[in-house]
Length: 583
Image (cartoon, rainbow, N blue to C red):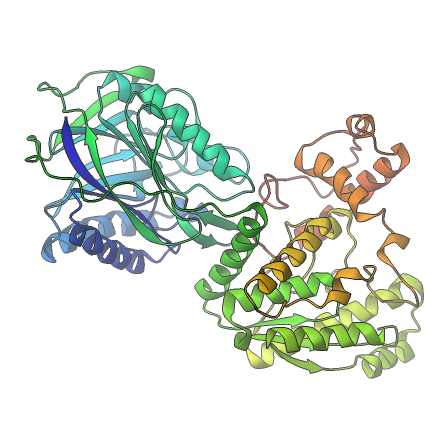
């Protein structure tokens, strides 16, 4: 057996910030070396951030990534860190790809490299390219066709990138055929609800298939609508957990491993799936035996509600910070959606950076205005009140609107007011719409859909209530003031655009609505399947009609953190103009 101290750096990258991301690699490598690491690793596409989307098709960006990688290797050596091999993800291009129909222009590759002593000693590209959900990697990349293996202190380490573990075949069985002692996969796998359990089962299975200890290093942080939860882990060849990192936190997992010593003859030739072994020797001889100092630890798992709430906070914080803003503006109605949005914003940015505006109309109840004021008192956010009555009256004198047009005018006046203050003062507006409302179009374009970011756009209404209650409960348990007023939790949901209005005037009870939507939107079930599950047939068909007709509204809604298996956006792409109706 041979020994190896592995350092897995679970960090956050920013798309396009090659210089800043390189600085992070330098900083965390220095930390890893100070911990005595023999092999240091960083997530998928750390140097460029992930996902880069159509930036991958810009030759100048690809070349910036390639030159940035070479410069990073030189800087590591120049700062005395070159003696330890570093695995880092970046954007590359194939040197040998021939132009052909259907291939991305310029043949970009989702790649990773091993840096050592100032040189790029090995590069490789992701073999399996995902093309489902939020992933478009066939659009952007060409696949790698090698099994990269580096020998570090007498251990053969096979390398992989994210989807190489999620799909059968390829580098996992190839690692077994090559006799690897460690399989290291670098990843930028986005968060979704319950994925941590799926991920653990996957890595255990792949370790058994590879026949060796397997390390799964993941990114953390946020990028546009994606949130990355970290949760890096190391399992032994039988699937036993050796170490597991915290969720949603940057950090370095350092672990002493005892691994099989590499064969004297390096692996070569073709292995499973026709992959060609590409082997590099960095240090052939094992280390002198030492007493392991860093044994594995397993960070506590977040409970389900805490996990989802934290994902929403991380996504919001990343969006605001990475786009150069410091503060946000929210229209506070006293309802549960704006209350949860405000609580998330205060937790993400600090209450001093959260501004609220109460914009009552003639139909706004006194208790809703009181709830908005109480929310501000409980959280410490800054609140002002601007009645929209005079503006509404001025419009009505000119247009004499009635019915739905009159109701929507109130919402649109509020949207205009929020954007005016945003332009004047520099805060970005948060849209408080939830997934249930977005699904059926129960929102006003250019009104309550106004905003730069929608923190709860992928949260069904029933779960909005659940998260709000969870947040209040946690506050009480910690001896803090619960942020959300009890009245916001108990009163019937209402847009308050006409006297006595309640959401159930237009929609089924939210428990029923969400039950139907989870099947229709998230699982792509048809009406017959949903009715067979116990839902009323007419209600099902009504909800499906509303959902299909609201596609044009959803296209105009701002981005927001994805937490479900199928969020509105890249996960679910339907034509706006369509006469197809689900049977």
